[in-house]
Length: 101
Image 1 (cartoon, one colour):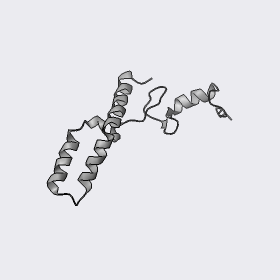
Image 2: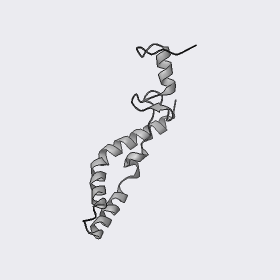
Image 3: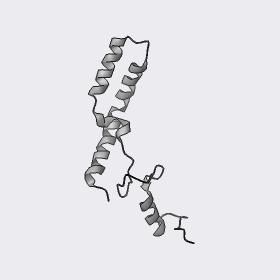
């Protein structure tokens, strides 16, 4: 099990990202547009820097939904490899069995 503080911190980052996503996209469009005057683009850059760092999408960590483990997480399932194996062994995933030879 991962530390609950790390899991909660990641959940906070997800909430912040949802809140500021549209604003970040709009500011980035202004910054990248070369037709807009330099002063206006610079002001957009300053506004972007004032937003919380944790609202950036890049700071979100893929974690297992069951255990909170940060490594070895399958993106589609949102489950770590260890939790997936335990669930398969206990028969909770239909059609999946632990291989042995």
